[in-house]
Image (cartoon, rainbow, N blue to C red):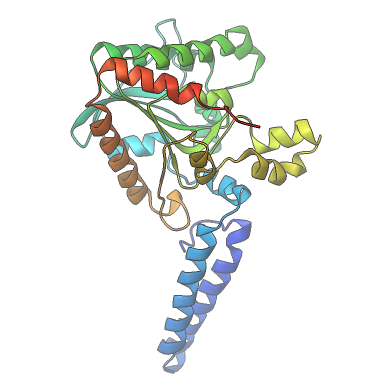
Length: 320
C-alpha cells in the first residue's frame, strides 16, 4: 500500500505485513541470501488478505474511507474527466457559494452541465469551501445551472460529497430549507437526463438537494444516508460513541441501498479506496456517466420525468 497515507485503524495489519516484506527484501539485499520464495509467498498472502478485507468492510470502515482527506474532490474529477470546463459563478442574487461548483464541460466528447459539492484537502481549503457544506446560495446557484441545462438540452451530472447542508443560523435565516425544497421540486420537473453520483459523503437533505436524478450511483466506499451515524447516535442513544451501531442500522452502503432501489449501481474503486488511484476512479466514474447518458438520451422528456417521479415516489414503501 502507498506509505504516504496514514493507515486507518483497520488497515494497520496490512501495513505490518508489507513492512515485513520490505524487511525480507532488505535482508536479502544485505546478506545475499535468496529469499525470493518467502517474499513471493508473503506478497501473495498480503494481496489475498487485502482483497478479502476490502470486500467485507463494515459500514463504519466504509465511512472512514469515504472521509479520507486524500480522497478525490469535485475539482479533481473536473481535471481528470472533463475537457473545456467553463465554470459558471453565482446565484444571480449577489453570492457565489464555493461549496457548490458547476459549469459546462465535455466528458468523453459529451457536453454536460457538471455540478458538485467541493471539499478541501487542507484546513485553509476547507475554510474556503466551508467543509463541503453548502449555504442556501449554493443550492440557488445549482438551480440556476439546472435551468440553463434544461434550456439548452444538456444532460445534468452531479457529483456529491457533503456531510450535509450548512446548519448555521445565517443559513436558516436566508432560507436553507426552502432552497433545498425548491431544488427537489424543480429537479423532478426538468426535461433532460440527470445522473447523480455520491463520491464520498452523501448526507441528509444537503445531498438530496442535488440528487433527484434518473440514475443515482455510489462509489464503492461512499455512503448515503438521511442523517450521519454520529447524529443518529446522538439522538437515539444520547451518545456519539454508538455511531457504529447507527451506521449498521441506517444501511448506508451502496450494496444495502441497491437492495432497496434507493441507488441504481455501485462504481468500483481501486483496492483500498479512491485515494490510492485518482485516475482509475475517475475513469470508472466517467464510463458510468457516459453509459447512463447513452441509455437515457433515447427517452423523451415526458418519460424521463415520469421515471424520475416514480423512482422517488416508491422509496419508503413497505409491507407489514
